[in-house]
Image 1 (spheres, helix red, strand yellow):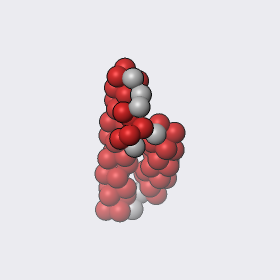
Image 2 (tube, helix red, strand yellow; image 1 turned 90 degrees about the vertical axis):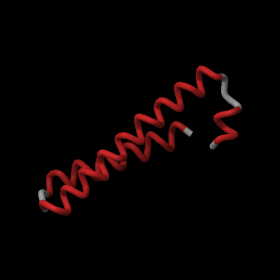
Image 3 (cartoon, helix red, strand yellow; image 1 turned 60 degrees about the vertical axis):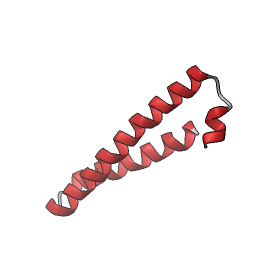
Length: 64
């Protein structure tokens, strides 16, 4: 992944880095939400956490 980033121009690499940072925040939120689901058993939160994790994973795969 690093070599892929290095092959891009600075602006493009900076934009990709920013996007990956945002996606990391989404993943962190989804993981925290999943932990909350485990503690509370609220099924609707579990579905939301699963959707967030899947979407973030797809976005990360598409970005790199």
